[in-house]
Amino acid sequence: MTGYDDNNIFARILRGELPCGKVHETDYALAFHDINPQAPVHVLVIPKGKFVSMDDFCRNASAEEIAGLWRAVGEVARTLGLVEGGYRILANHGGHAHQEVPHLHIHILGGRPLGPMLEGGDVPPDGTFTR
Image (cartoon, rainbow, N blue to C red; front, side, top):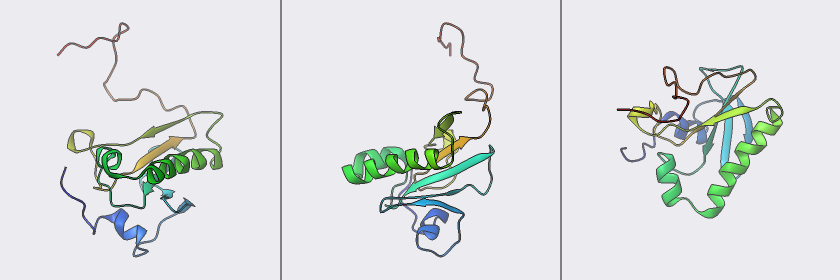
């Protein structure tokens, strides 16, 4: 991954230069509706710090930032009524995972049964893979 880009769309949202459909905000995180939803409920939760990926975040964020981000994820899921029916959280890292914005973001998806985790990614019953 490359370094942090201060002009990425999420950095611009955090600075107030671009609007967002805000769902939740704390000292450590901002949650807002995804502009290209992949489920009836699709919210992004981003840390307020300049972190490119989950790897960057885990290596460099303070304990308060880490706790604050994950608490925000849980609060958003509860606020949106997703806990009982279930939801998926997902964070992409790098090109192979199709990370499009170089700012860590956690997707919260729910509101209906979501189906298999990966398209074309059927796991054999014994859980083994051949390459």
